[in-house]
Length: 116
Image (cartoon, rainbow, N blue to C red; front, side, top):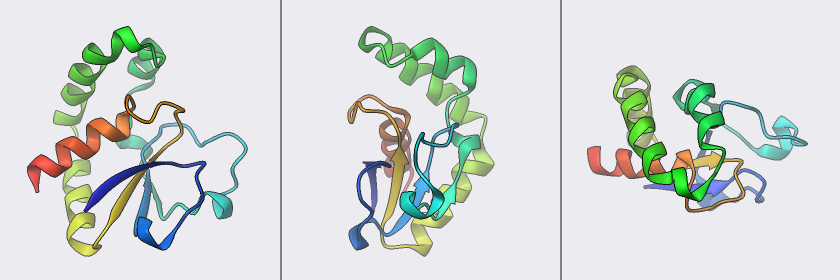
C-alpha cells in the first residue's frame, strides 16, 4: 500500500516504511523527529519546477504534467520505489507542503499505484 503524509505529522506504526520525497530537508526537523527511513530527494521535482509551481493552485495541472515528464526520465528511481512496495506492506511518501492535495507526493503515489 502507498500513502502520503505530511512529514511534520507524528510518525506512527501504520506508516510502515517512510520515504521523504522532498528535494529540501524540512525546516526545523531533526532526522530523529522526522522518522524518515529513506530520503529520496532525487525523485522530487527539479528545483526549477518546484520554484515555478510555488504551490500556486492555478499551476497545479501544469505542474502534474511537468513532474510526470520528469519522472518518466527517472526509471531507476521509480524501480526503487516499486521494490520498496514489494518489500514493505505499507510505504508512506512524506512531503513538507502544507497542501495535502496538491504536492509531489500525491502525484508520485498516484503513478506508483497505477504501475503496481
